[in-house]
Image (cartoon, rainbow, N blue to C red):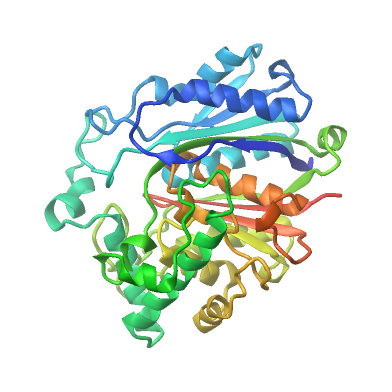
Length: 410
């Protein structure tokens, strides 16, 4: 199997959501910038894999036809010559899925140079589910329309469940989540691409309005707009383009598991009966697959970028990625070991907490940060320890997941 590597990456600054912006033009600019940084032209690449977009949500068709074909539109704009163009949709895990597809193409020897693109301009507020011409399943919107359960409702249920299962008080996990937000805000303040650069204290976070107890407003990410581009190649090509190629040790995608008892964004339940799998089994499986693919264990991970649409997600990703007893996760966070000078630095980008979420592009921001960190180019955010291996985890609605493991290759 051919080895693959990340050669270069670029992102936009993340901005407020819901304002008109030419997605294809922005992606075309990112594509050219990413290629130029590697000394390549658009005519040199073999394929473009792009995410689609979550917009617009104010029409029964949900997604405009042009937004479904961003790869083809970008290919036409930048001057490629009949290359393969594909578009991928997987909710918040879309960019991770697009990356995994491109990586598979390289590893299979089908292509040598593939550009992965992603952009989103999420609608303001919560994602409102209603029947479309393409999907008349009215149960999709039941939790929101009948019960009033929006995304943070589920995350709050997860947090409360974890507190119950560990025998802790709700106030305990609330304080833990506030600590996470305060820590991430310090790194977001140092990131020129982050939307939010204000430093918060634990007290600031706990003083913000309660959205769904135990989640306060500042523990929840906003929706945003932004995009990114990543160039991946086979390793031989990578070594000819950069003196710091970053090996793609693993890229996996996950999907729903029947009997998973965690509440979904689709159905309002924690049921599963006596045959239910352990909670968050879906989250763990693509991580296990990635460890097997990379030939490593959790102990080999030096740094992580995790998809944190709420502060609870950071806690749960550590639980799942490390396979620890939960008390170890809590101690790691409270002792400061997730900071840049700690044992396991997490989200030194500032995370989704500081960026807000440009849904279909979010993983590209995390790949960009890991690339900087592994190359020692993150400036004031640079991890203090010697980094060799980094992991990215992504989670999306309806059971979409992705895990990427990157390693130094010099």
